[in-house]
Length: 194
Ligand code: IMP
Ligand code: MG
Image (cartoon, rainbow, N blue to C red; front, side, top):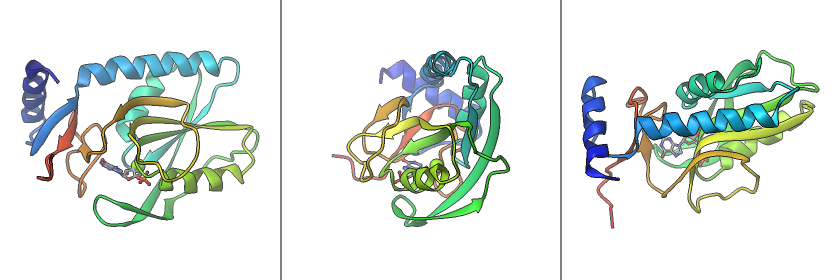
C-alpha cells in the first residue's frame, strides 16, 4: 500500500473514533469500486431472476448494505447468524445457527453474502444446510478470501479481494466485537510478522 493510502486510513480511523494497532490493507475507495463491480456482475448474471441475498451476521452487515445497493435488480434480503466454536482467531468448523432465516428457500435463487472465507469451514457447513432447503440455485459472494487457507472444497463465484493469511478487521469484520465500524479493511498487528 502506498503511504498516502495509510494516511487516509489513519484519518478515517480517527474520524471513526477508534485507533487500530495495525495498517490499512484495503482502502474505503478500493472497496467502494470493487463492490460496484461485483454488483454489476451479479445484476448481469441474475437478470430476470432476482436473487434472495442472505447476509451472514454479524460480519457481513456492512458489505451486505453496500452490495445490495450496487445490484440494480429487485433483490430480497434475509439474514442469519451463526457462531463458530473456536479460539478468537481460528474456527473449529462446529457451527451453531443463532438466528435462522425468515424466508423459505424453495425454488429461490439464493446468494449468500459473507465477509470473509478463511478455512471455509463455516461456509461449507452453511452451504450444506441451505442446499437441503431446496433452492433453485445457491451461490456465494464473499468480500474477502484468505489465500491458501481453505480446508473445505467449494466454489466462491464472487470474490471481492483475495488477501494474505493475516487477521483483518474493519468494514464489518471484528476482533472481540471491535472495529466493525472502520471504513477501511485493516491488518491487525499481532506481533508475529515475518
Ligand atoms: P472460516 O470458517 O475459517 O472460513 O471462518 C469464517 C468466519 O471467521 C468469518 O465469517 C469471520 O466471521 C471469522 N473470520 C475469519 N477470519 C477473520 C479475520 O481475519 N478477521 C475477522 N474475522 C475473521
Ligand atoms: Mg462471518
